[in-house]
Image (cartoon, rainbow, N blue to C red; front, side, top):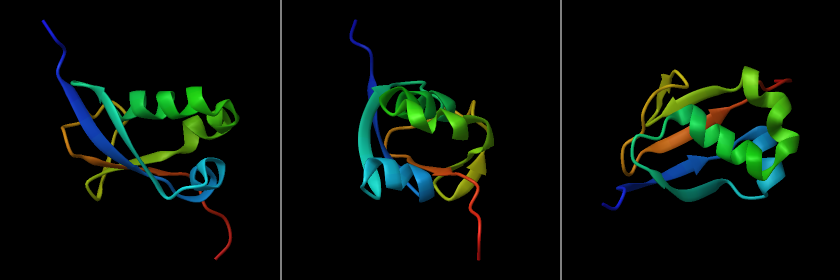
Length: 86
């Protein structure tokens, strides 16, 4: 039986955008993937981002969510690291 896949858009801000060099990514994940798992995937690709793991907030479709929030196909995920300055 094939596992269902979902496509999500990952909006990158601040340090995440600096590291990737693009404002967003479109990725495919297994169904039932949580926001936290998406962040783990991003950190696996760029381990230098691990210092931001504990202090990054998450948004899905313009709502703040917890890391265990399960994603749906087509969701837009935002990683919001702390921003300094004004």
